[in-house]
Length: 116
Length: 114
Image 1: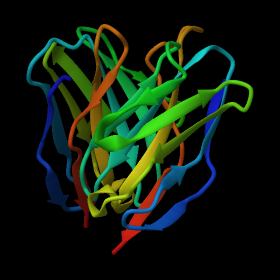
Image 2: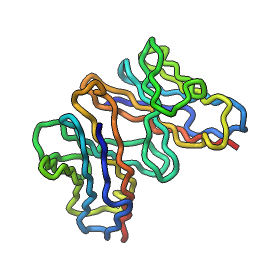
Image 3: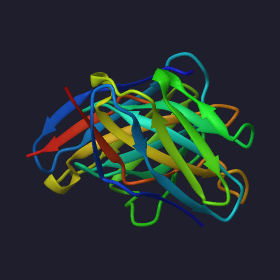
């Protein structure tokens, strides 16, 4: 079984300040982890993914995330928020074995608002 | 990454009618596609896995007779919501899986049932 917990349903930051979106996971198997972004009434765009290589993963638009197995966390960060970063962010886990190779489990999402 | 399109992007229908949503892979052949549903301010919930040339696999609690899935080719999967009711109003998103198990998502279809 696998699950994802996004610890904050809403994060509000000022433009130019750091962003931290928190995600904890549980998985019976070695997982792959993803962060997706969704702008209003749009589909999902992949920001970055961890698939058992380097634990610090760099993504698009200046985002990065660090896989910490001991803490079962995969928090998303960005040094300086931009107005265009305002969106919903989903942390997603996928097992790498166990017969459900493709199935994704989504967190409930974190809404990021960026204030001018 | 792969380009996925959905049609229509928005649809409004009367209660009791059926609505078909298309999901197309524009630049590669997908043997597996997925259909998700997203209620307002909620996360995506997997409805079914669509395999080309075979029956779809539905998640627990999803009525297969209500949500008909047809994956007729490697580039097209369709979801038909039969006898739609207001509670079926939602954002429907498809995705397809690449050979390295990465999923690419379509832009979604907003269904409103009056």
